[in-house]
Length: 322
Image 1: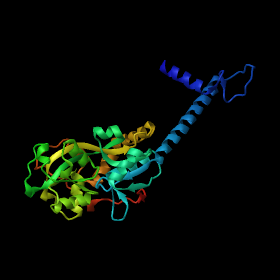
Image 2 (image 1 turned 120 degrees about the vertical axis):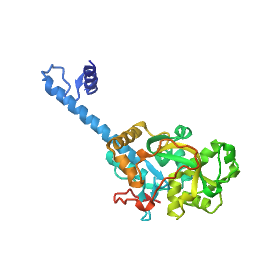
Image 3 (image 1 turned 90 degrees about the horizontal axis):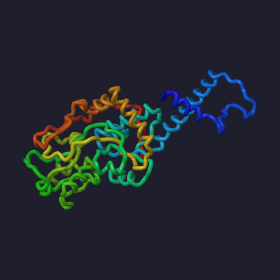
Image 4 (image 1 turned 90 degrees about the vertical axis):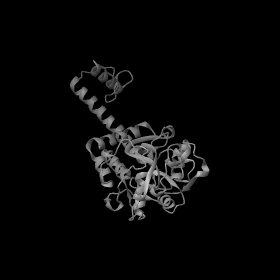
């Protein structure tokens, strides 16, 4: 019954007013028609029409302005000035799934990109941590990987954090407009206790040089930047977990749903095929599937083991825009 109804609706969509086929000249003389060829003609027309619409929709995401930041191992520019990272490789794979040519990537300071995403349609920013507040401001495709935002402090300080009141007694470094700053604000940490940096490599230097008591940042990204700066991550520990969350691609609030549905569907295919986890493993020593789903505020929590030198170069990188 459903199939008959669908066919009736589809057939009527291919007729001119009055039930005259668009492929036939108008005539008041009854004409003998062979039902089988007519059905085949209608079906072919519907398939052609559907493919035409699909091809138009698949070209739409190419209009998006893609923005990112230095946030290794998720997204960053390598020493050869090429975009790299888990999110970059995921995005390239999504483009391939949808037959979208590689698009330029703009690596900008986070605060600038964030403001652009709020105000300009057809923009996207990655990687962004999901939060209830952000999901009211933006639309997301993802998640692509688990993330943990923590307070990192020197082990030698032996900090004991049991409540937000303890945090308010510290000078804490953050990247401006990053998730770490947002989480501290939600906990009621006063602005005078927050020390701002423009990017992660400067942030870990603030901690290493004793300019701050702790930093609020993704543990993966902090460790990566420590290793890059020849700072031993084992000298630092997680004294408080601010958030267990997920990273994804954030889009302007007015981004059309069909665009997002296509990208989300392509991501589901990457996950089902195992390609998504292969991408994660190329950038991490362990599979994201083995990353604990939850963590505690245990100061002895192990930090991730990452090696910037272990990254694999890919010749098919999207171009970078300054």
